[in-house]
Image 1 (cartoon, rainbow, N blue to C red):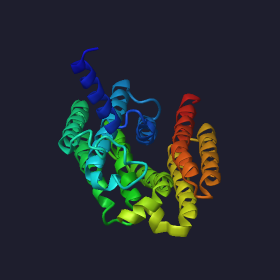
Image 2: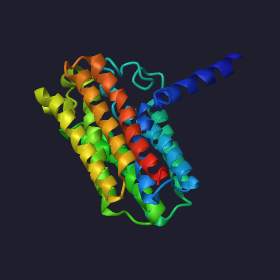
Image 3: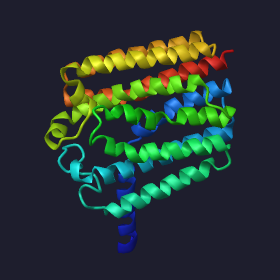
Length: 292
């Protein structure tokens, strides 16, 4: 490989690290609630075209969000142990490059939904605005994780809009469930960085909840599962769905064991394990429809 090709390959790897494609947990935390919504809206498996559009859109928008988040936090991240080596923070990528990448990815995501109805396209504009403004909420909002939950869960109303042409009340309740879930898992994530965030003045739920952080995580998990259960019951889901919820509740109890001592490794492991909580709920929803 020549010098120019090697330089291009190195640059590409930096861009991939910027948008966290090497760390797919964020994609999965966006994807599971979107899949819940698509299955509920379609009363079973959704049309494959819509499924492909929303899956690819989730990857693109999460990637765009990572780029704009790193741009917004570039002065803070250098003071945080976990983020100091990120490509933008360490100076390997220029700020304008991160903004350009975020813009291109957002445009590609919007292009994906052009074949869908007008309501879905309108909601996508709101989704982009929420995702782009989220990083700045950490400057003044005591629990920015609640806003993150809206950003991460906006595939829910969009999914209902794409399948049914409307956004029923159940979709907003499901979004509320996702907000509580996001507060739970991102508080676990914030507990990893609490000492650094206190030094630099960033607001997080882990700081706001203080010594009640573990209790708050468990309460938010419980509220999320109750709301998901109510929505699923309204849609006629029963045995397999309730089994999936039970597994998800078991995941939440496992998180308690991981975070109760507030060790960094345990809190980060709990955050990553939320993939299985979301997957358990989806498995319950999909299985319930499949067994009808």
